[in-house]
Image (cartoon, rainbow, N blue to C red; front, side):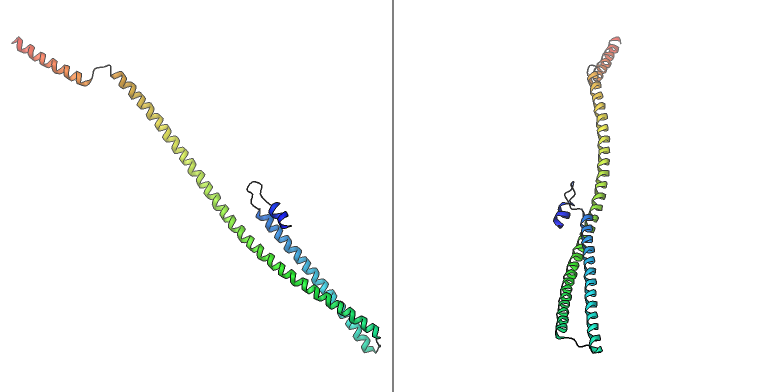
Length: 196
């Protein structure tokens, strides 16, 4: 019954884990049923004892009043008394079994509550950890976007520099300019020398 109702019936279809609330409800329902049965047995036991006490009282009254009991009546009362005593013993045995069973159920329930508490703590920690990781992932994505934007800007700048370098390769180099200037000074000096 437990396997059918709780292990299979209370299984979460997404995670495959047994739902703790259903386990707790099942255990509490079982405990209530046992308590009701114990109370019922106590009432039966009390009514049986009161019946015995009533019969014993009647017997005592008859003895006090001097009524003579026939052997058959007395024998009948003894048989009924033995039957009631046997019923009381049987009920007491059932009551002891129920108490033991209830004790075991309470132990299982306490263990499940402790396990549930641990799982809830773990769930809270995991939820917090997931939120932290999501925030961290968001920051990393933002940083990646900034870096990608910077890289795109740099690539654009480098492309521009390359284009400028290609354009300037057609113009004379600085060294050529310096050489030509040096030659011009030499020629001017030679010209001055000729003019003197």
